[in-house]
Every structure is written in C-alpha cells, then in structure tokens.
Length: 389
Image (cartoon, rainbow, N blue to C red; front, side):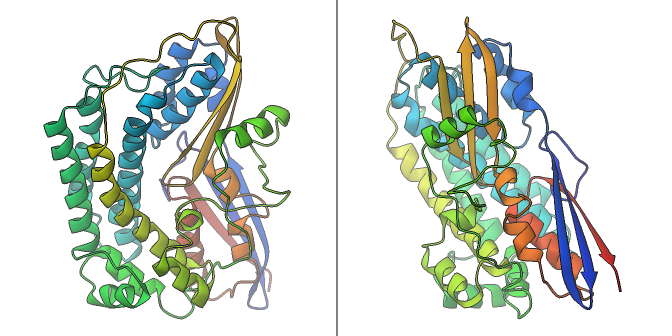
C-alpha cells in the first residue's frame, strides 16, 4: 500500500518543483497495471476466477464490479443477491479503512503499527462469505447458493464491528466537530492522535481545493463513457472536469465532515474525519445488512439474445470503481476499468490542485505524503521535491 513497492494496484509518482518558498509546479504520474487486458479472451467464469488474483487489495470489490458487468452483458437478474453482496463490499471496505488507520497512521506518528488487531479484523471479515454462501460461490455470474448461517454471520459481523470500534475509537465514535476535537484530545488510539495532529493550523486545510466530488453515478453512466472512449479509463472526467472520489466524496453531508469542510475546506482534516465517519457508519451498517438477508438461488438463464455488453460499479474504501466489458462468442472481447486512482491522481485532479501553491517548508514532504495517502491509501507512492532557488 502507500509507501510500499509498486504492486498490481499501480503506483503514483509526484514531483514538486518549488521556488521562493512555494510549490510552483506539480507533476503527477500514475503507472497502471494492464489488468483489464488480462481478462480479454477469457470466458466469464475464467475471468471471475482470475479477478481476485489480479487485484490483491480490493479483490472483492473488483470481483463485484466485474460480475455485475458480466451479468449485465448476459441479461442475468441477480438482484436477490444484492444485499449479500453489499455486505461483502462493506466488510472489505471496513478492513481496508482499518489497514490505513492501524498500519499507516501509526507509522506517520512514529509509532508501531497494529498488525495483530488488523489480522483479527480481516479474519472476521473473511468469515462472512462462507457464512453467506457455504460453497463460497457468491461471486460467480448469477450468484451462488445463498444460504445464510445466521449464527456464524452474527458472530463474524459482531467481531468485525466490535474490533473496529475498540481498535480505532476506544470510545463511542465522535458524531460532530466538538466531539471529534474532544476525542482527538484524549489521544486514546493512534487514530485519535493523528486526528489531533491534523486538526492543527497548517495541517487541517492542507490540500484543500475546488475539485468537486464524484457523484454516485450508476454503473450505466460509467459504462457508456468507457465504451465510447478508450481514454476514459485513464483520464476520466465528470462534466468535462476532474472530480475526487472516496470517503470525503461520500461523507460530505455528515455533520462532522460538513463542519470541517466549512472551516478548513477539503484538506487533510476533512479527509481523515470522513474516513473515520465512514468507518463508524460501516461498523453499524454491517449488522443491519446481515439482519435483512434472505436466502436465494443462482439467477436463471434468461434465454433469448443477451445484450452482449455490460457495466458494473461498486464503492470501495478508496472510491467508486467501475468495469465495462463486451462479450463475443461467449468470451470477453473488450474490457475497460476506471479505478479511484485515475480520478484522484489526474494531472489536474485533487492531488495536483491541492499541492499547487503550497508552502515549501521543512514539513512539505510529510504533508504531501499525508495527502497522497488520504486520496488513495492503497497505491505505492514516491514524492520528489526539487527546489529551484
């Protein structure tokens, strides 16, 4: 993840040119894996087995976006599986948020990471799929045999929810800006201590810019653009302009996040608070999703001529992910993916605009690294600063 060697999720290189105490130029370059190309020529079932191997970090979300696109192309109605799939997506998003908060955030404070707590959360999340689908076939086109084991599911969800609240908050999650400041001031967890640091002057508003949030467009919106323009997957636009995606885009209306946006703009404090607010929301939502689940069987073959092309979209911890693919003779003839990285690290996107004009003091590298991690914690990053004075 951030700060590690480049993996299959890609990497980002940020070059800052400074002069007279300011960042005068920002260059952001993204190296993308050719994962979509690896799916071409394969049958849908072959592709679905390959997706989690290609994407090690958001394997469930990538699988969900891909299977939704396949089902759309085949005309399969898998809506009875929607609630179970949403639970799987939420569990993965929660553990990915937890990775940043338990591993990355302590390191940025000079503290020891918390791998044991993270391992416990991941084990709880991993128990959810077999508790829903005993044959572990929930991510196949049309859905598998959904037979919820209520006791196992309740135990896994409770372990994940309680573990998150204990490791991240160690108290009731803060609901507004006053509670956030009070909670951060206690310094009871690494998350509280980093939040306290990010609320200080010079940190709270760092990276704020006017790039709008990516709206929660349906899968079809992405599919139409991916199908029409091969460049959209690398340089996506919303209304002809850049956009940001992720916790801050989704949580902007949360009272806590809205207060920080009003006070400091879309800077480090708002990004971190949005991640915490979303994690608290996910922890609560897991149980309500589990309670509403009903059993379901795989979607029947609809017969007739399927559409042949389809799209899928899912929210990940990092932001909105979309797949589009086209089938010919039972195989994937074309496949295109647009990931959160392409939105957040666009040449004129929220990272580039947030760094432009920043003060180039001794803390610039640390602040820039925090902004990169806030916008996409799962991408390896390298930041170079060149002073032209």
